[in-house]
Length: 125
Image 1 (cartoon, rainbow, N blue to C red):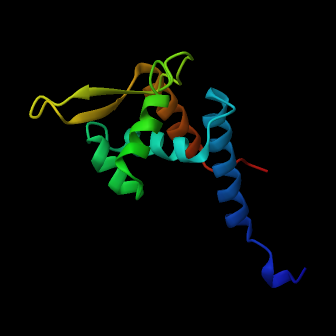
Image 2: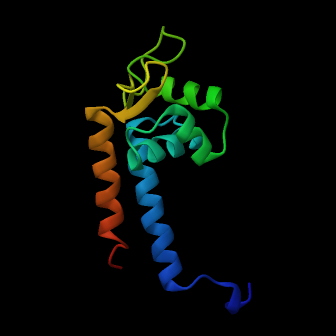
């Protein structure tokens, strides 16, 4: 490998931080798929947005977003297995048809853990 193609120490440290964040996220549920993780992060960053707004932000369909958010609820969308209990939906006070996504207590705790890992930055070597 050519020396010029190697990552810098700063780049490796950033990847180490990212790996710790992902490890924290997966510690909640080892089978969490990347699109579900991405949806969780989107809802955490913008609580109270509608399912459709979150779907547009991630360039996925409304039904796809609904399924992922349902799986992150108390029960998964098949209703016979526990969900991840990270996100809940509520009917909008403005429009009864509009459903808005919010973090559960468990979801908020996980979001705080992820933020903590990011703020810690790279480990001292």
